[in-house]
Length: 288
Image 1 (cartoon, rainbow, N blue to C red):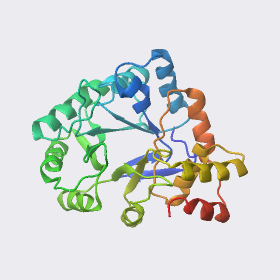
Image 2 (tube, rainbow, N blue to C red):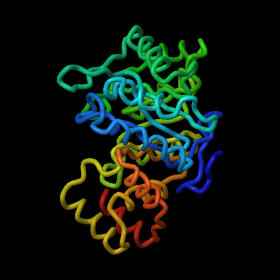
Image 3 (cartoon, one colour):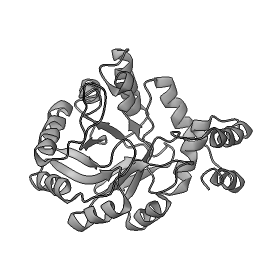
């Protein structure tokens, strides 16, 4: 059953209704997102708890592990509830050193889509994000060839909806000129707000924005400011960061990750925190 009691309610990705509070599966893999988890049964328990809490949006990638998180998702949750929608990413692979080299040639993307289908145990991928850029963030350049490859796979019935990740505003516009997208997944949080304008544009278009690293890359001064607000509200910094994202714009969907059921429940409870206008004004100074 679709839950409406989770923080933020729901959002529609094309014809898919998802909870705005989702779950990111990356942390289920081993250290450095490589290899199996230290606690296999614990990882399965987290995924089952995700569904039990009413979360209907899981973010994953076959690059996590590699292949580990998708195998875990299938083991824990297959056959999937009709309300559960799994979002995956293609466009990067892993090397023996744990790096994330790009894999955006047509043959790379076709192979990645078929591997995701196989490892998740589905006939159609609900949503596939094309991963662009690199570890430093978005990089300029045309996405036409890789995105058109995904469009071809979509036309073949293997993909339901498309999105882009680690993309510039120009790349988002280029993708939209080729085919409809339903989401953009970029790094964004209180301290890193380069996408403020893009978020507002996407909101007007009814397109979701999915930020990753809700607490990543804060300077000590910014962390101190966030800690101060959290202390005043008797909350954790993560709770404040997640609640701020939900209140920032109605098209923002959350995918915080954890390998702990207790931490998962804490994140859900924390995101329900209501921030006052005064709180928001103080927090906005962090990103200014």
